[in-house]
Length: 167
Image (cartoon, rainbow, N blue to C red; front, top):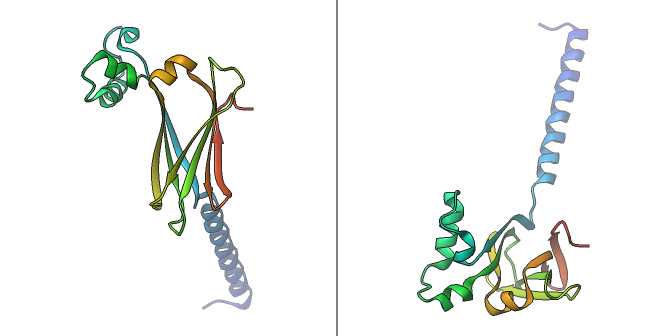
């Protein structure tokens, strides 16, 4: 079928193709995050008077209605006004909790550093944690202007993300 020269050429082409497939598979595996943040969503819920009616974007209007669901009085609504950060992240399920640490600076407190920590006891492969800066605290100290979020397990940082204005 094949002559000696053709057999060697075919074997080299097959070897090169196989090497390319192995390299491609390795690079894809390296790009997939095993642990860490996969997406961060932020939403600023403002007081109804500031909105001036319904939003142009139906998704933004849905989010606003979802966050205000069950708020009956104006005091209830004021208690929910503020900023909401939802972190979607992955971690290896295992012993020990994972702590989401949210460090931030606000307009009303200058360079003062604030921190919110949430401990997740039941760690799954995919997780969702929401941090809220809302209510009287939000009105008194202002909105978040810069932030850094990090995931910690057993004293080791798994991953971190930060806003554009974080130093």
